[in-house]
Amino acid sequence: MKVVILAGGMGTRLSEATQTVPKPLVEVGDRPIIWHVMKIYAAAGFDEFVICCGYKSHMLKSYFVNYFAENYDMTVHLGENKIDFHGDASERWTVTLVNTGLHTMTGGRIKRIAPYVNNETFCVTYGDGVIDLDIRKVVDFHRSSGRLATVTAVPSPGRFGILDISQSDAVTRFHEKPDNEAGWINGGFFVVEPEVFNYIENDETSWERAPLENLARDGQLAAYQHRGFWKPMDTLRDQRELEALWNSEKAPWKVW
Image (tube, rainbow, N blue to C red; front, side):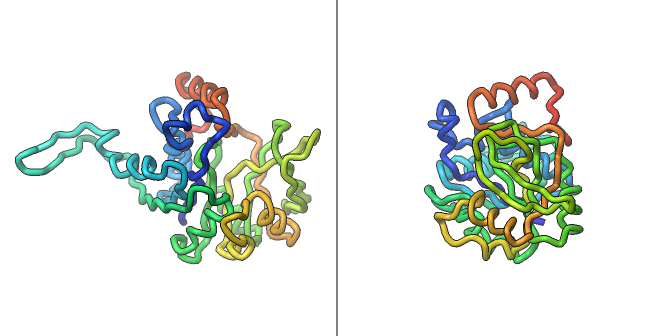
């Protein structure tokens, strides 16, 4: 099963760092945040990734092209035009990087990668949030629900959009960023069927608006409720909090 990662935004709320690198390459510890996200999926056995690039896409491509050179010891044989890398390759990922446009919205980015998921069930997430989640359980839940999409719902910290969830785990309404409401919110870890492409109109479509709202209206959006750790890296303060957790060697999202 492919994992689609939305990594093309400009990260304006983290502008202190994203002026020089795309947000997914902002580091927590000595690794980019997107590496942490990918490790969460790989821990559950998902190691095929499709990355939706946009802002500073060349830097994301360079990171993966030069992954071994950046992360492993090596011996360079100049006369033989040969490089030996030392150590076991712990990441056996297949990574497809797709330029989905500089100004394309999240829904448009998902629609653009349709040819790369082979008309199969796939995961979708953002390249800037971590969670102590067993992705395999979410996939199993999605399959048992029989719906076109599943969103991982997390308790609202009071500043995100709200999910209304029925007793049968169906999302009955998806409403984005209301004022003075509390409840469950979109945690950003999805499992979806290829039919969701029909809910996305074009590059201007935000995944968090019409597609999710209409899936909920049609009874096709399920919610996997997660009460554990979850944190997006929206601001410099968030990055520093995640950095402190990682350096404490007690990072809750380190499920590998």
